[in-house]
Image 1 (cartoon, one colour):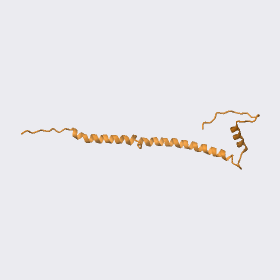
Image 2: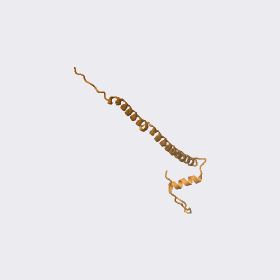
Image 3: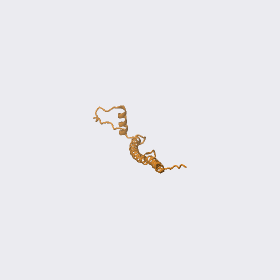
Image 4: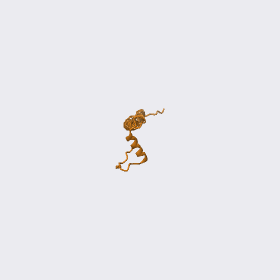
Length: 107
């Protein structure tokens, strides 16, 4: 009678831990770098801070414009403001005035 001897291999014991390590590495990578990962949180916080700064600048500009418009309403119409706006729109000046040219502000 012939008997076969079977030698056990160690590779079978390494398959499950290797697969677990691969899954953990995959999900760990995506938990940090994924669309909703930890790194994305920091990018969103930086973008939020940037947008809040822009919002503050826009609100300040709007408040300035609202103040200037309020000066042009009936009853509170200031002649200096009206004169300034008309000269700016028509690009005119009086003959006895001195004009100082300044660079235009970036809007």
